[in-house]
Length: 172
Ligand code: AR6
Figure (cartoon, rainbow, N blue to C red):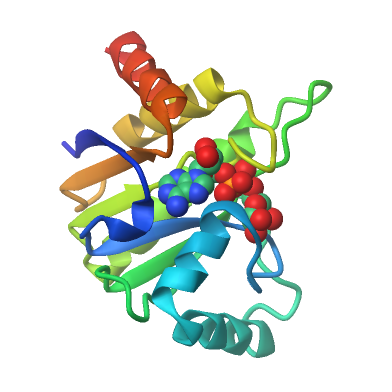
């Protein structure tokens, strides 16, 4: 079974095999954790994303899917880019959010990554309520059986870390 750890702070400073990016469908960068990863990892990551757009992903990456690139200068070996759904009060998009975690873990498994870190996908610019974002993350990671040994869920601030702790105790 995959071990689940919670960490506090900037995901780019954590040493893991693969770091998951909460990207957008363009894969060409943005704010939030996406901006932080591109800044810390350097231009190699964007170059790899542009290459993907020019080859296998001309229309970009659909929400819920995941794809890997180099991690450039980051301590990690790979960045796994995924796209979460934008929160909607009218439509249940949690299946897409769960797919983002599930598919990122499958990509990590295929790469041979043993340690993987995740931010709280969709919980920033995309507006997903923090407690539910944390619960979807924890339950999906628990349900996805892969060769990944340890997942580190990173809360950027105290509120996110508290939400992650509540989610772990609710998920049992
Ligand atoms: N380390 C860990 N977590 C972080 C960091 C960091 N350095 N920076 C922010 N967070 P967001 P989304 C947290 O907005 O909601 C981008 O522009 C943040 O507090 O990064 O999926 C993309 O290009 C929040 O809890 O991602 C897309 O356009 C969580 O990471 C869009 O934002 C996710 O916030 C994606 O929105």
